[in-house]
Length: 195
View 1 (cartoon, rainbow, N blue to C red):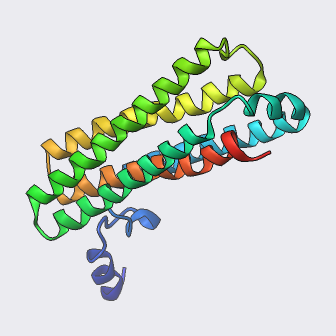
View 2: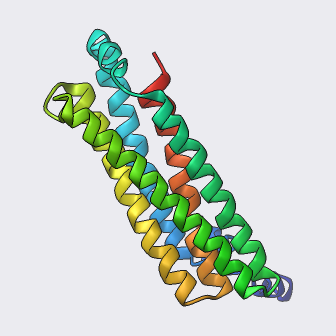
């Protein structure tokens, strides 16, 4: 390694991690994020393939969902993601108290997301729309449930980071939380809106 390469690598957040060296937070979180994105991509591909074969069932079932609840959850989760980004900025400026406040806001909105989703699940199940109803509802519960599990994990991560506050920890949690946002931004139109 040349002296110039050594100097460049020393200025990276995570030297020695190859292509992950320049990413903020813990590189292992980025490995997790990339692997989760691949899993969701496979689910989305399978959903599209099955939808093509059962178009009428998917369209009729999709009409039974509440796009307003999904839209509300989109706004809630995006605002929560903004709060996570503001927490990263605050810790970068050394504002520990302000960072914790932004993390608390991100956490609270994540809880709101969960409450709206649980109410939506209860409504669908109350109408007799369960995972075994048809292929659409199998994937509705599978995809949104898998995302819900990621939200719960993210909430635990945010709580842990607020307790063990450091710049690296906040960046790591924010990276995961942004992945949760991104998945929902893709999931919402695919499940609720696209016909």
